[in-house]
Amino acid sequence: MATASAPTTFRTFSSSNPKINSPAKPSIVPQTPSFLKLRATYSTKCRTQFLTTNSQSIRPPSLTPLKSTPSDASFEPATAFHGLCYVVGDNIDTDQIIPAEYLTLVPSNPEEYQKLGSFALIGLPGSYEARFVDKDEMKTKYSIIIAGANFGCGSSREHAPVALGAAGTKAVVAESYARIFFRNSVSTGEVYPLESEVRICEEFTTGDVATVELGESKLINHTTGKEYVLKSIGDAGPVIDAGGIFAYARKAGMIAAATS
Image (cartoon, rainbow, N blue to C red; front, side):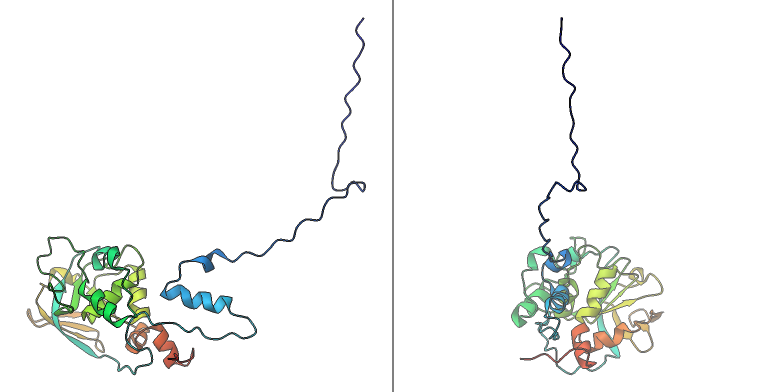
């Protein structure tokens, strides 16, 4: 005759059991926020240095300017630009403005800054017969770029407006911009990103002579005799006039002047 097996006994433990001495949990070491681990670029260096400085002795960051122009130089507000126009269409992205292979050039180095300008818009397709910068030249003969919609789309590389400015371009007049390119243009102070009220890229031809009147927000095509209304650059104007966001902040006394 089979014997009955003993009933299984279960013992339950919980943190409320006074007989259980749970080991103390190790203290959690604060980790550096992920945004402070971003690759140090011109825009992230300032943020990183401010946030990692001893809170008892916070000092303004000491940064190398993105471009070779001295940050403490005196800048005169621009009132007008006059010269030849270079016309492009819609969706000109930053890889067409300055291909990634040239991003190793350091704009704060005067020689490399000039070289960067010689490669401006070199990524345009072959359908653009006229080169923006002639071969073996460092500067462009086109001081104004006329563009369609969404100019400067693609990756958020600050080298894009810097390359245009280094080439000698003073202003871009487009139907619309990618937001990051517009912001980078203002923060670097390289070119004026102006917007037109109408689609002017279909009314201009590369080589047309034009004048941009900043004060009157007006564009004049002297080749065709037509005038166009531009949207006001607004508060971004003084920042570009000063030579960029850091030069403007120093001029306004927001941060200390750069030390040599």
